[in-house]
Length: 219
Image (cartoon, rainbow, N blue to C red; front, side, top):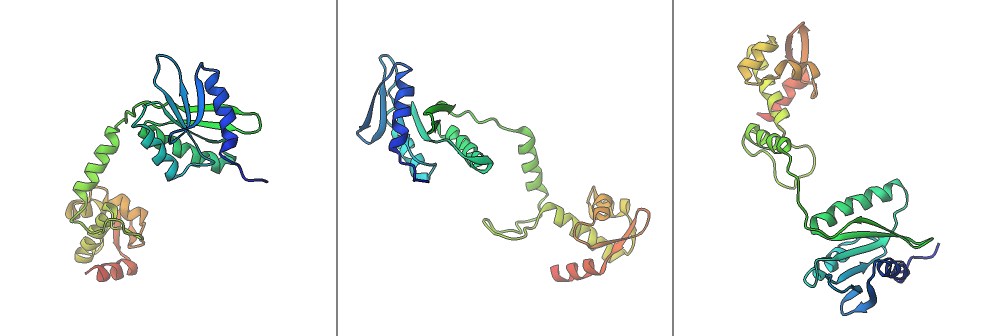
């Protein structure tokens, strides 16, 4: 299959703009496509065969001229293509850039978003979760940008439960919760995510051999 050229996008985009009453010209100054209509902001469309950082940089640069800036790319293919494409739509919305896709087989143009200022919707629930996790994380045990396993609030709580059991021996979940300061100690020991706990009897847990080793490594 031959490689798509940016020039293949021009005719469908021009026809789409003309159908909306714009006069259209290509390669005006630094812009790929410029469309003019009396009484309206000029429209600029940047053409690319796929999303790229260069495309977004060009579109942002055109915002110094007009707020009506679009990017146009060929229509995606397959589920993976749509997933990547939809992610880029979200990014363009945050930048205030419109997104057009062109179906090359028939020249159909689809508008996925218009170039309007982005108004982010804040999630009170996510904010509360973030602040709670920050407050509960003891110290600053991780390094920003690190890869691999990170120290989480959950792991720190598991370590507190394990430390309590090492000091006090087999214990009831409610006693571990109170003594270790971990509200969900019983659930945590029952789930045994790290393999550190063993059930002695109903509601009673002790350290496993793996838990002993893990605490020794942490000391």
